[in-house]
Length: 432
Image (cartoon, rainbow, N blue to C red):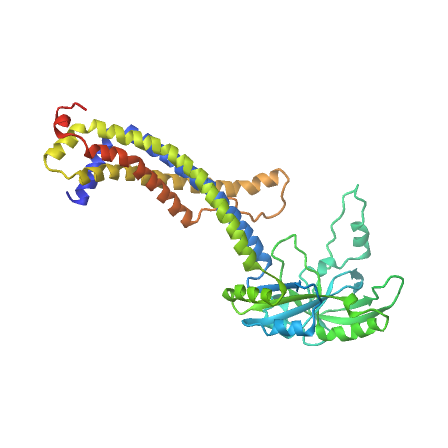
């Protein structure tokens, strides 16, 4: 019997009891839908967590947080970092720890001040929303929210409204920043001193917009050539360089696949290292275990549906005992008879899983659409909510179909085997 004839014969037999077939497929559909929806939560949370991490960090970035022996960085350590293989940029930013004040027309602000080598910043592909990198000591890059941090006297007083009253959110400076100048006042960080010095700086670049609305970037980034004069001024007042600057070391790999090798190499050399790829590996391991657990729980629902498949196929064998006897008397191979019944089981598993996946997609879409609306109505969230609770990748679809098909075949194997063992004479007499 050709495969086409086998499929036609199996389809003809299944149509004999449509209601029973429908209920069996329905049970398989519900089980598969439950499996996919449950597992999709794990995939969804992982996707959201990964996007959140990648939106705030660069995959090729490797941060150095210190030395394992607890010592301070020396020039030799910096040379080791610079000599690391597969590095395209070594960005050493230093944050000024003293008090600063910005004077912009009639507005003032208190922003963090950082120094960096602009040549290395260019190699690291520092992104700007406007302008260019500084080329002179009096040129600076300001953060995307720099203007918002420049407040007038009225706005500053409104911001200091007592907690019992509703505070007024200041608008800050909304005019053009690029190519405008401001005054930066550097103050002696030692208590009881009034030493300060003013510097006239010009904005030539504006940083890119932060990935999240709640993130604020109002920092001032100066070329490291501007550090010399500030350091000289404060050292003359008795302040050491260690008191003035907090270093931040970051390396940028030539490609993502080189990050792991760089991370391991630097750890062997005695540095405390962090890279987003390393954290992603740890997070992916956790989520893999989490998703396996969800899939295991969801599989239980499919196993419950398998009871219906087993009963349906057992009834089918009992009802077709005479047909099986006739087929065997005509010389039908036992393997053919077994295959015909397994085709029916497979059909139930495949059709049930396909309908289950369609339902799961509908549920997933509904959850992701309604969740932000519900959170806003409850007052738990404001603005745009970028979170995916349920996500169904193709890999999950294939896993669900595979599990459903496997369970269906296992459930139908026993009845199919029973069909091959039916005695011909007893079947023709309908004794079974």
